[in-house]
Length: 353
Ligand SMILES: Cc1cc2nc3c(=O)[nH]c(=O)nc-3n(C[C@H](O)[C@H](O)[C@H](O)COP(=O)(O)OP(=O)(O)OC[C@H]3O[C@@H](n4cnc5c(N)ncnc54)[C@H](O)[C@@H]3O)c2cc1C
Image (tube, rainbow, N blue to C red; front, side, top):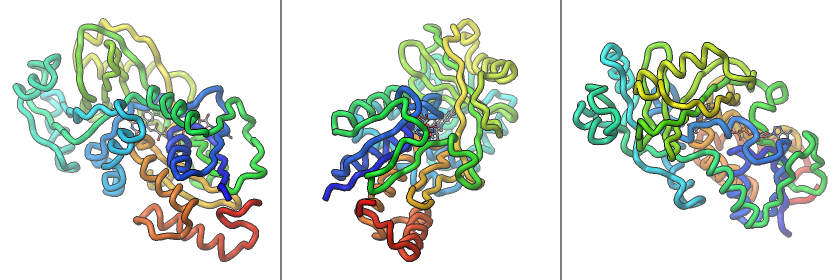
């Protein structure tokens, strides 16, 4: 019998899971309250696949689970991943920040000014030292989300856009909630971390890879999107408000962009936006079983980086329940699922309800 799964939410978590399930011949439907895929935080992401840099503030798990993300995206969406590494720079007065960053990370080379110029000619003469994380990659999240939606549709996945928040789940063997920050208040311990971004357009600067500018108060990154467009991000504010960018954040993001290159001062600002990163207290994703629903949430600032691993993990558990998986995230899921099997008789994976 073909298994039927309903996924709530067409952000990066829901779409990557739909891909993994559809690839395993599961019949998948996706209910999304917005009128298009990527109705939440995923739309505002930088799209950096940067597990080595993220290690600066994240536990080792993020590096372990995220290092194969670029390969997953490459296989799922050939041509979307740009493998040119990440450059990390600091103003001469903030050189201590570079040293601190280096002490908390690995997988980088120190560059001098000539090497910075060779990598990014637009930054010639601007930075004496830099860190280069050559294994890292990035993609354009909006292009990737749209492409994933198109590919999934071609694979037979049915999308219900503009669906009611309580889209009926009758007839599905499994329901997976991937609703991101909208689950705050429903998912225990889930909180929001607001991230504001802007998009600048200028022909005066050319960058080939994400550049992170370290600063004691306001670290910033700029991700080139092609055609002279640059995503500038991002604030980290403990809030689940997804309203317009504040004047202060706008000033800080623009100041940092200007500090990276003064030509950004003449750039056109073509967009501002804010997304709410869903996060648990340990800032790690969580897979949990609540009643009849599996919840996949808490991707925090690592949705594009970690959802490939999580999606494969969850899909494997749905299709082949309770087989051995790699710890540590899987353990929580496995334990929760085992408890569910012990405690209930009416809910079994693969059986219709
Ligand atoms: C400014 C910014 C920059 C970031 N940069 C990066 C980065 O460079 N790299 C990286 O890996 N991560 C990055 N992130 C983090 C990443 O965007 C998030 O971790 C990720 O988007 C979370 O994905 P999600 O699918 O869980 O949630 P979302 O993307 O929020 O998706 C949830 C979806 O569910 C829908 N929905 C809500 N309620 C319902 C309901 N009841 N029924 C059906 N659908 C519903 C929403 O409309 C939405 O489409 C960034 C985030 C921000 C805000």
